[in-house]
Image 1 (cartoon, rainbow, N blue to C red):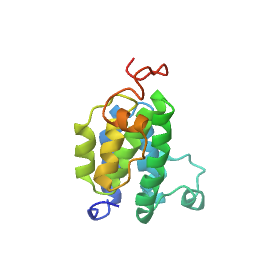
Image 2 (image 1 turned 135 degrees about the vertical axis):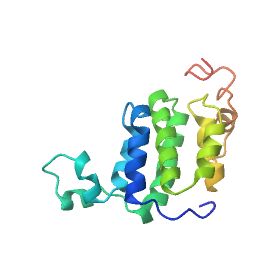
Image 3 (image 1 turned 90 degrees about the vertical axis):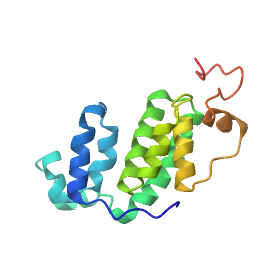
Image 4 (image 1 turned 45 degrees about the horizontal axis):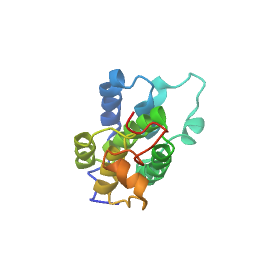
Length: 161
């Protein structure tokens, strides 16, 4: 998937990232990606006291899985764009940004930051796809949205409003 990633993010880097995004993460969407990247000992202060290492092992996304998690979440994000889901689309952009960060892909984050947000974040998600080497789906509606246009000229679902 795209250019090779930088070396895996360390637990200390992930903890620092959690702290850095805290104020901008009103709904905890970024945290939903970053927290499972922590090993139990580093995540412990974020967890309920009764959470065990065994419990956490079922939640933790290990470094080798960040790429597949990003790919899977990209597909989910496309559905939110297609369905004109405002908050869900915003969540998708935030989560994809954090997956790119975990993968050490500052180039992907820069491409997403440079893209505009209209049409449910489609331009930002398209930038993620292009930088990660993922295919953008065929179809005029998503292509228009990726270019910041309404899905159709007469969209009544929220595009361009």
